[in-house]
Length: 80
Image (cartoon, rainbow, N blue to C red; front, side, top):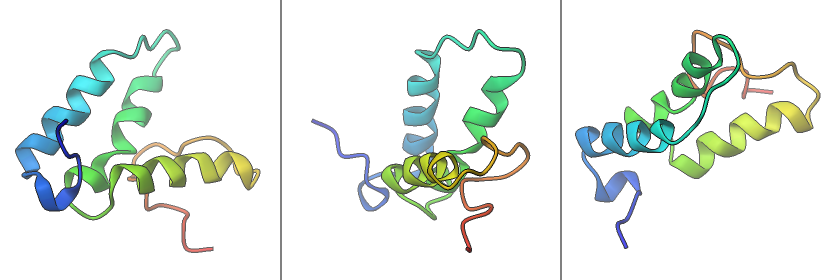
């Protein structure tokens, strides 16, 4: 089994991991795919692990914040 940790992957490998995973999503809503793709930019950049990006995404729903924000990474809105 391949490791998806930042320490075990290159930027190119992380881009491929995200692209492959998102390729399996059927984005049937209008315009939702860009927001989903952007939430993993911090992982691709080597700033956050996949699990941290997913946790940040889910925290918005638990905290009552309005869904994923467009135009930023999973780091947005996580300072509070």
